[in-house]
Image (spheres, rainbow, N blue to C red):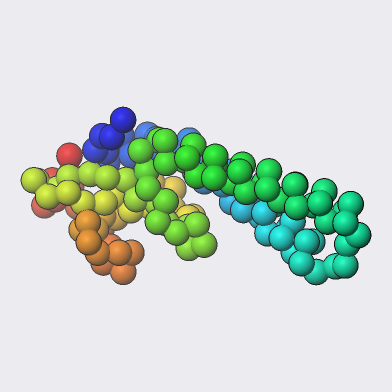
Length: 130
């Protein structure tokens, strides 16, 4: 179910979100490992089919991990760059609370149609985020 995050709620959810994000990264690494194995060495048909089935399973688990992460209410913007957005509101405007891998709390936001480069620091005194 969709809901907007307050800064407090986003920060409260962040530890579980980060855990799910890290799990997603591991799933991606497994997919990449199996793709490399499938493409880099000559395999007999038996080995090829086995690795291909493992790859299919890994891809399924990867997308299940994406669903699990986004099931928390966040939106995965870039796995490669480590960007997640939490839907929020600033006054009556829909905005994103922005998290980048390595950050320990939500400290930035940006407009709905602006990406990471448009991030602005949260300021309790002059910003009103729901």
